[in-house]
Length: 250
Image (tube, rainbow, N blue to C red; front, side, top):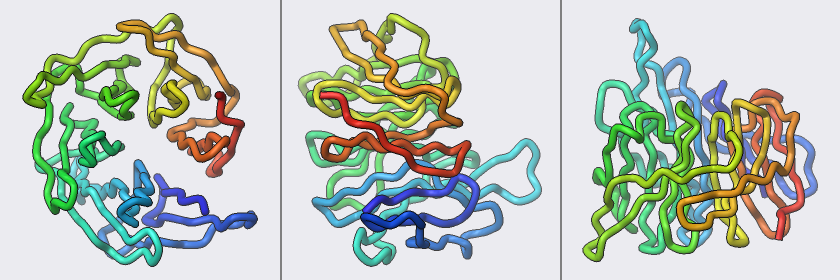
């Protein structure tokens, strides 16, 4: 089963295996006009669908949003967890589960990463830094945390000391431009990233503080998310309103 959120409506959809049409799974239309969803993560171990819910604040220009981390039952769609990101204008965007089983959440608007401990109902600030203004995709590769910056087209490693405290983000030099890095996931020793600015899906091979970029697919309309599953890499193609897939590189 494939689960896809909508960045233009208050719904999360599911597509059953073998089906070609989507059905509504989550309905957040009661949350306020203009509500929509960003990142999705199916946490099978805890039977939870994690998603970012964004609702515009009425009658404010430029646009401000109140956003929330939502956790739903992966089987029934029933609400389980809700945590509102602190601040008048926030952008809950994406998340990853760490080796410590905690959920790490990016807030693009404030340059913050939050950490929701396993079993907790509210998250705590993990890291706030000026280079994270625009933080979007987040993933763990071999136990190390990596994030990207969708505004400044950057990739960072987050170093952690012996006590578990995060330090200054380390700039990872990429050997070719990546434009609008968005959703990011790791598999088979690589990081896969959707480039919403160039319509590409790329694989990043990390070697120390350098990354080699391999373009896997191009010509997409605003790809915003990737998700490896088995031998397939699923892609959310926001500009076309569809989900597509390519073989997952070994």
